[in-house]
Length: 272
Image (cartoon, rainbow, N blue to C red; front, side, top):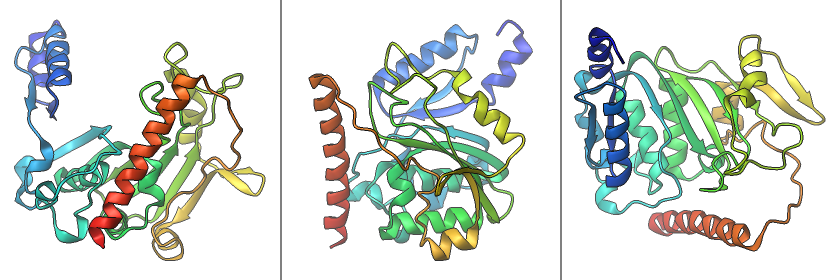
């Protein structure tokens, strides 16, 4: 940022917290290199702050986040959340933080795993009920499983919502793999151009049938809350092709799925 006024504006507008030392240092260095002399990014753990203590001065107009998922938090972390929202799943807790820290009229975009969409344990259901009844969840973009390859194969989604009104209806859109791709990888990563069709649809929304399923469809909040029981796993990938991966990738995929399953088991045992 060459302009001093712009640097001050951005410096006073961008705020963040990072728990791990190395990514925190990378973030600070990146901001310094882009002309922000005093980055408002802090080395801290967001989940160790009581969400009920947040006030208007702690809220933001825009929140963008790709929270960690697959992890399981201990009881001392869950104690910072209301009992009905006290999930063991890290991503669930971050969703609660976002809802408490989003200013009225503010907007958010959050990347979450499929487990948040189809999960029906008490905490997940309560978080989704709060999201649909107090926020406007207007769009969910379903993404391919290899978006974050080789770091994780867990399938993710982008949830777009704002704090303007309760949800009336939610659009779901499935972002398919580009033609000729079986999966993304470190050498063939996902690029912005892969969103071109999605962006075109975003500006001119319509239902897109896909056999007995849908690539794009909208559902009322009442349908999501009552008929679906807060299972919002809709417009996903109905057909899976068998894919033979190299042994190293197979082992990594197994370990990631095992870790995710272990987190689910820990949550269920904690509830029992």
